[in-house]
Length: 168
Image 1 (cartoon, one colour):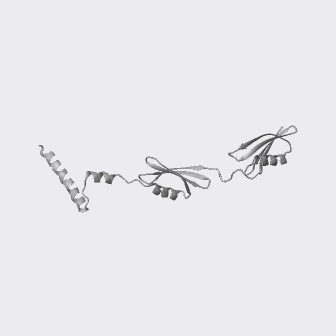
Image 2 (cartoon, rainbow, N blue to C red; image 1 turned 180 degrees about the vertical axis):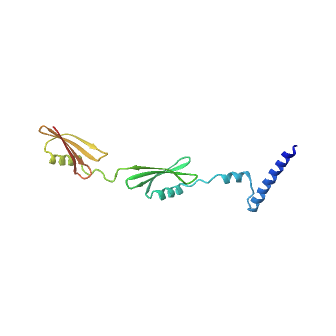
Image 3 (cartoon, helix red, strand yellow; image 1 turned 180 degrees about the horizontal axis):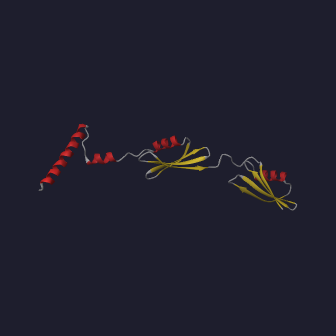
């Protein structure tokens, strides 16, 4: 056997023995299993991820979802929905998306019949059509009077006339 190679092997054995002595002093012998366990980081829990997300955006958690390497946490604050991605390994926030949401607390309180009544008080004519715009929560009522066509927008939330358009 080559003496240089033999010296290298002996040095390697001695250095591993040194590590064994250091680890044994801590009552934890160095094994390949311990080395592998020490290099793998513990994943954070969903509860910890929620805490991290709520520290960033103080609101109300709407939904959580667990992915392979992250937690997705949706938080509502005011008129915004935040989607926060928390890395499972590091506990760091990888991404935040902010989306404006309409205030859905206001629901239609005015009936179609009431909206027609309000529009006819504004323009006493014949109703041609009625459409409901759910995004804007308003009734669009077309009325014919004489040789003019009126489009009247009535709020479905509070019954106020929002707009009047007149076409010849």
